[in-house]
Image (tube, rainbow, N blue to C red; front, top):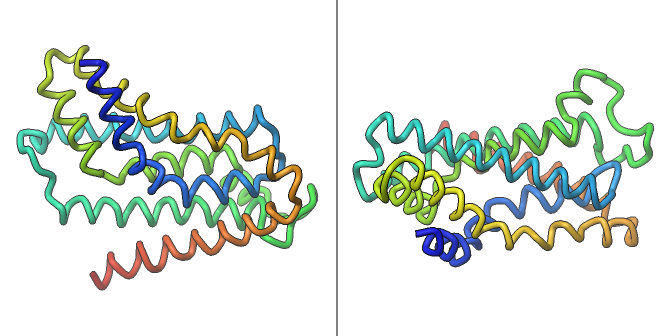
Length: 215
């Protein structure tokens, strides 16, 4: 059962990178302090927050009886994704405005409002964006939820889901090498900050507000 869970994660990890890449890459490349230990901590915080959201969704879905069916309602899944994009867009936007807006490249640059800098700190951004990305319910995740609920008792189901998640982690290993590039190409940081700001607006407006109010 553990091997099945790991293989399911390995075979579907590209779904994870598809949702997480546009969030993590510009965010990590544009951080104020680029170090291997700090970068690994931010990646780990993001991934832990995403796993926490998966557990929350699994518990809620089980309580509501959603996991008694083999298929997830696609309309419901799209609605969750809309809120995921809105929350993730807000998190990235606060980080851009509060900590590293494109023109604030020095240690003293960026926003001068203390509260906004705290809300938009890199660590809070990793937490909030990880929770937000966790709202995307892809078919592999739904499959893992079903198998974890109906594959045995509660403990074995929990281990199944955890090892499924572990199987997706190798796809995030390249992110640990971002400081190697960011420290050697100074333009990467500024480009990443502009990209993050644009991505946050794209998430908020085109993937969030427009589908929510006009979809």
